[in-house]
Amino acid sequence: MLYRIGSVVCIFWLVSMSACQTPSPQYRVMESSFMEFDDLFTPIDTIRFDASVPLGTLGSVDLSDEGEFLVMDFPSGPVHVFTGSGRHVRTTDISQCSSDRTGYIWSARFLKNGGVVVVTSRAVYVLNADGSCNQRLSKIPPGFPSFCERQDTVYFMNHKRRWTPQIHAYSVESGKVRNYNLRKPRFPLSTAAEWGNTGHQITCFDRGIFYRYAESSDGEPLWPGSDPVLFQPMFYRPTSVM
Image (cartoon, one colour):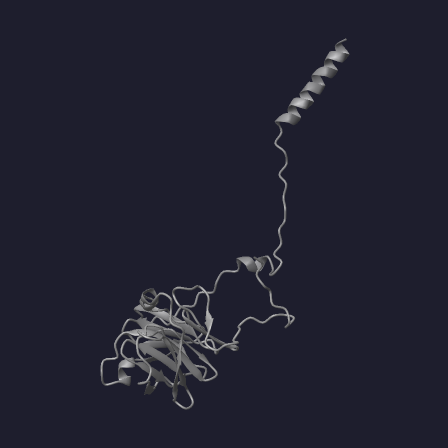
């Protein structure tokens, strides 16, 4: 009889102990399918520009194909060029390019040949690769910071034109300017209110030029048939299902 009571007590103790224990945690390992796990936590490199160069408000930063940085000192300061490690290369004061007031600097970007295009509120300037002034583009309206380069031609987005918005194409080699009329926006007032940041309203691809109005989130081709998307195989084009 005592043996049975002892067995019952032991079973009850074992059951109660197992019920009070917290279940062991279950671990599930998730591995990245597109990059190594350690690379997911690699810190971003910090580049410190030469401290001897005084910088105010950084208006924009552009990166050349050679890895140099073009830093625009907003609103009326010079433009600086630094190496990829932050060493100062040169500084160009845009006021030396004109005897008149140059106005506020809206944007600046590298050209493929090493030169620089600077858009101000009063004019558009082209700088040589050494930072010296090349010319003032009198046929390009000032104050439009969105532009890009493709095949030695710089395309400026002029979306605030009252009647028909245009893209002004400037040839770096010949200096000639060609104007392309764009479709009229459905909401002219909201479109005109958007000044546009560098690269946000026009982008150059190998397969064409695309621009965007504030009324739409999609880019529109400058030339019919332009398509920045490559499909593999070439005959495959996905279609939306209604």
